[in-house]
Length: 141
Image 1 (spheres, rainbow, N blue to C red):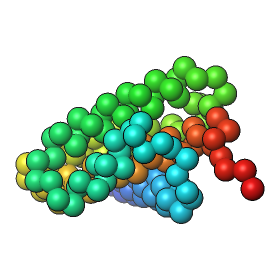
Image 2 (cartoon, rainbow, N blue to C red):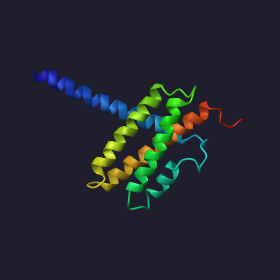
Image 3 (cartoon, rainbow, N blue to C red):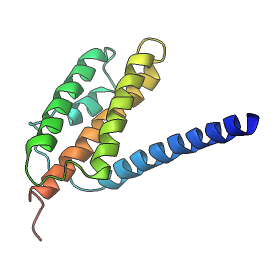
């Protein structure tokens, strides 16, 4: 019985580690690429800039939720954007987990809440970047 519990615990810990490693790797890969997303269409870049100075995080959270609704709508309804790719699913799940983490930490640990908002903004930027690439908005050499 103890061995089963130990194996289950280690397996869950490794699954969580793998998931976080994949998410952070996907985000790190796309941060190096030039942005194809128009600055005035989404607010996730503005949120990332305002995270350093704003003390009230709830308006930033609402702005990210608006962007999320737009991006997820586009992923569901735009033909050929690969909405069902494993990368998109992982990033969307990570967004939801970071949303829950924000709500758990916003009062007790504001620094952790800021990190969760920053990661959510990075996820939206990554998804918008991928959609821009797939829609043919890339730069021609």
